[in-house]
Image (cartoon, rainbow, N blue to C red; front, side):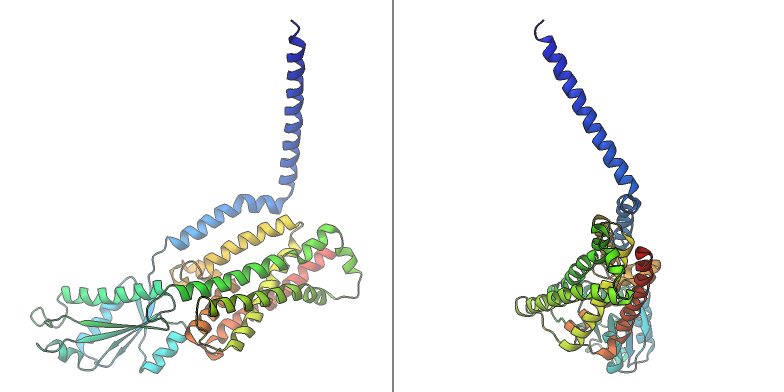
Length: 388
């Protein structure tokens, strides 16, 4: 009997504790649901990410653009070209007149490989002592795509022989057709140069965006944005001031990481350092403009961080970092033009691994510039709404 009051008191304490806990949980849920931006991104962002990543990664590497130089101009060489074009992996897009023209196509990224059919190819195929030869030259920057290109070309030639398409079934060359392969810029098809270059672009993107996205939203959250609005600063001047620190930090980080790739991982810089440096600064300006736009439309640093995280996932999917752009669905390829990281990775890989100059990269640089200017203007408009 003496123990009953203690049991009752303990029950009252537990009920009170659960009541307080339930009230706190209710308060947190109400507070969270009132934050519409954070709520929307928390519920929709995972679904968007799994759709984007699923559509990107599940796509096979097909439709890779190649060029053919046909020095033989024979029925047999035309059969080879048809066999190449009939594969799912390859798409014959160009017929350059010489190797220099084909090299320009590779430098500009318009083709991934080149097939050279030599003179007297058909005549050699009819000889019992000479083995006909075909040369396949691939862009070795991406070892994965280069390997698939070589495999597809060899498979197309082998299928041509097996299907008795060569002249007639009785005239197959005794040794078949010999396919010589050459990988430009990466003779051993080593994965590390492309990987390190891509990591350089990704980390530069992450550091700059995370610093820049706090520029406006931090002022808004601590209540100092009103003080900035009464200063003589114009909107563009305020945006420019908020850009300086992320630009400096991004540039310093880029230079440090570039040094690491050069001296520790021995990734050779084949192109001009100053062209790479100038285009990197242009890219950092554009990414900073994107981040400041996010900073003006979000109301808290938590919101800003969440939006940047989702934006990073979208950028990874649509930039060619995870999978080649050509493997994405057409709609995603069009959307990817609005992703600055896509253009910058192309610039990085071309300058560092290929040694390309500005003449081959100006379309990507122009795209980054247009995106940067457009996003700066949008940021100016959204900043005006914040300060009103």
